[in-house]
Image (cartoon, rainbow, N blue to C red; front, side, top):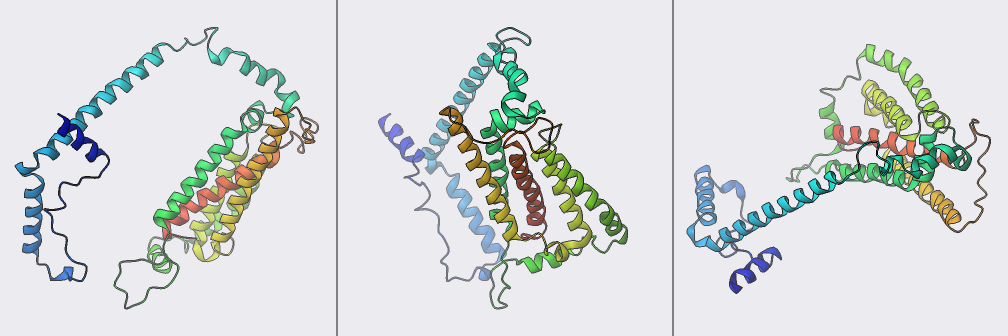
Amino acid sequence: MKNKLASLIKWIKETKEFYNSDIYMREIHENPASVTREEHLENVEKVRNIVYSDKNKQEKTMEAVYRVFAVLFMIFFSVILVLTVSNLPATGADNNPANNEVAERYIEKGLEETGATNVVAGMILDYRAFDTLGESHVLFVAAIAVTVLLRLDKKERDPKDTKIRETISEAEEADRIFNTRHDTILQKVALLLVPVILMFGIYVVLNGHLSPGGGFSGGAIIGSAFILYLNAYGFGKASNVFTEKIYKRASVAALMFYAIAKCYAFFCGANHLDSHIPKGIPGHILSAGLILPLDIAVGVVVAWTMYAFVAMFRKGGF
């Protein structure tokens, strides 16, 4: 039993590999093209026999133990979730968190404390501004992940280089096969709609503290205008405005402003200090303290992230 437990611990820590002494790895200097199809199938069969042979009983035992623990954990976690849900207060009950003093505070004191006539904007960009900051960072991290996975090399490939690598210029050339940028109807419609969509998106962003709207919805509208322009006119014209450098600077500046501004506001509020941030007159465009500039920052991140996703998936870069 002790030997089994010790082997399991080594297996979990990945300090023991069962196949190192049995599988042959081809040397780097050997030419893979020299392997025939028959030799390849023979090698595959050898590896299969090694992996599934009766000599690897210890490995099979570890896999069985792993499956048992996985099932037990799933059952335990499912029971915890079911018990948690069964103990939640009923809808409309007095002890339901949705009916407590927090929601009452948002509704009754929101205009006075935030200066925003839109209660939702006051809640997400003042009372719970750190949640919105996290959501904006989620978009930024998603854009970084897409960039890491899909970004192509900007430099032209050396003809003597045999590595399988694609450059942005090659991806753009391939993209032209399905590109509709020479569609006259699409270009004329985009010429008419893009300015209107941009103006409407800016209005939604700037009007977020006064009525339904804000950075997320307005940024999505502005991003759709960017994407429509790209589809109509292609990367050639779009790259004159939408560059990787501008995207990085705009996104980082917007997120840094958001974080610094709300840290300052929360620090002053937690220490009962005057932040000297005027709330203005409720209902005016320049009111609600930091909510308006924060909406602009969120809108910038959302719009640029949407465009970045399309650019990365289509040609691996801006």
